Amino acid sequence: MTWPGDACSLVDAYRRGELSPVESVQEVLSGNDPWNGVCYRAEEALVAARSADVQLPFGGVPFAVKELETVEGWPFEYGTKLLEGNVGTATTEHVFRLRKRGGAIPVLQTTSSELGLVGYTSTKLHGTTINPWDPTRTPGGSSGGTAAVVSGGLVPIGTGSDGGGSIRIPAGYTGLVGMKTSFRVIPWTPEAQMEPLTSTTGCLSRSVRDTARWLDVAAGPHLLDPFSLPRGPRYEDALGSFDLPGLRVAVLTSFGGTVVHPDIAAVVEEAAQALIAETGMRRVDVDLALPDMGAAWLAPALPVMWSGLGPFWPDVRDLVTDEVAAAMDMAPSYDIEVAAAVDPVRKALNASIGQLFADVDLVLCATNPDDPYPAAGPSPDRVGDVQVERYNVGRLTMPMNITGIPAISVPVGLSPRDLPVGMQVVGRRHEDALLLDVASRWERLRPWPLTAPR
Image (tube, rainbow, N blue to C red; front, side):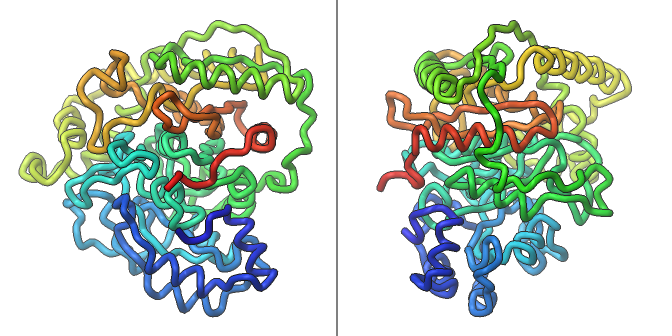
């Protein structure tokens, strides 16, 4: 194991002279990856380590970059054999800001599900990534590689992206903090994604303050992203500053009617009660009914997938996973009627969420409906010992992506199988700082293991 603490404490150790960035980067470059979470190691990181400015927010901290984010000169294969051998020609603004503003050093590239499409990480390009808490289980997806190496102890922090839960799902499965910000707090460049308007970038971290500091470094507008937001408050400085007593909180463990295993529901319910009692927030009861969101989430992505793969389909079918093949088979049926049918669903979902947050200030719910899937993917129709839909995972996280509202997942305990359970704190659009504050209160109340047990 390299540094066992969070990224902020590593910076503190540098400033005290107890450790150097060169030592940290060397340990990461030579460190073991028994989880198959690493797909590239950047040896040139040692050059950056020698000149690291440890007075910067993340000065000298080695971090991982999810393979869906391009870094100039690194492989850029997007988790698919279709792009095997492709090399990045640009660096995302997200990574650039972490290096330039934050002083952090990108050292590892981490595995993703193919094209970021599903909630586990197993591809024909890189094989299967496993969970440091249990090698038979998945760390989730699509940011599964980052979750594995941060939870496993190789690096203290790393990038993720969340288009339907891809930061929060693996955070929940591996005992980490994972936040989906309000839509485009962090800009999406160099090519600003126009559709689907669901994806955000961020980090998987070991502490709330790491995530807050990350946003302080990475957030803010960019001319190439018309959806990017102005810089907000200093997130780290705002931790502990909110007046929480009296805030209305709904505990909706199975947010929107998702099938949640009773064991998971019990852990989340107990944690929610403890957090409300500690903070003086006020629990309120509400009814929440949500439309089926699967088509509303997937349909806008189909034209984007078809624009890249359509000219080669179905000749490349053997190179892709079953999920990508299924989506591509569906794509030709995307027509004006399908597009027209999606719009009312999105409007209905927005209306439901809008009414919810007229009645409450915060929602607490589960992050994942059960323990992690088997490492190579879900068995049909069954997760754990409860009969559920094959892709029930994501139904607790997807509404926040479609509506653009923020949500943060924090560890709240272990299931009876000794696997991490995550709880989401969900709030109104642009109230990200409040969510971080609430999460930090929970962190102080119930500190969690920063890495998986060995």
